[in-house]
Length: 91
Length: 177
Image (tube, rainbow over all chains, first blue to last red; front, side):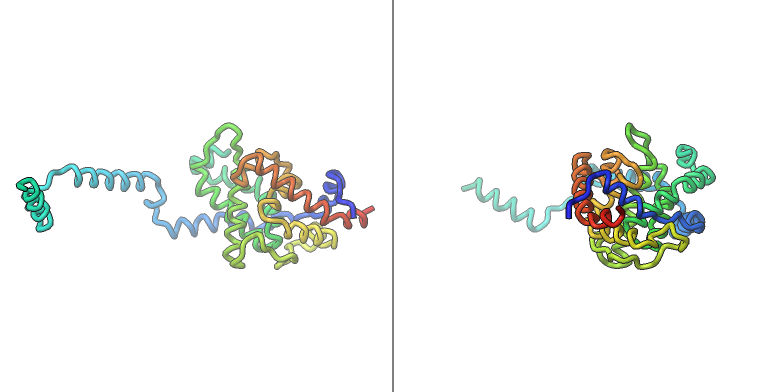
């Protein structure tokens, strides 16, 4: 059978009519919104809370990296590395 | 109205719900081929629309309605995956639950059922593209925005979808004449 032309296809497709939205659809939307709001704590819904938490985390990281460690004692592996290096230069 | 909704005005968003609920429901109905699932998807899309509308930005060519259709498509895909544990590309050819109104506007005629079956046989992107073009008068650019692809890709989905339907529904045209 010959494929339909564009206008013929349009004409055929007109015969598939979708129903109108059910009367309960709009009320269901707000029921979903309210149940979703109950599930998520209010402070978690605001973007500023996430921005604050992210900024604090970044600040803590920077502080931890930038602060020089006090009373640092070389570990066994560090000492071994230094000893090997010294031995190398002596040779 | 969109700007008022973005400021948290429920009454304004209710008006938007009133305006878009039928197009969105009809869109999800044609995607899912099932009245109950279509209602679920349309409600989910409109609820997500309210929760996320503050993130919607009025940019050049950005339309709120297109954004809602995008949410509806995503909701339909999620629902199809969750309820049937299959993708939207493997829909049943027959509706699972009938349309709520038995008065005649739904697919109560044989031709409607055959068109629905031909749509269900299309891959999801093609079905979405043809549905938006033929039943919601959207341009290729708007379809691209809903599908999240380039205009060229949207045109390709539309072309392939229509091509498949032209062959699949050829006998329907013969019967109509």
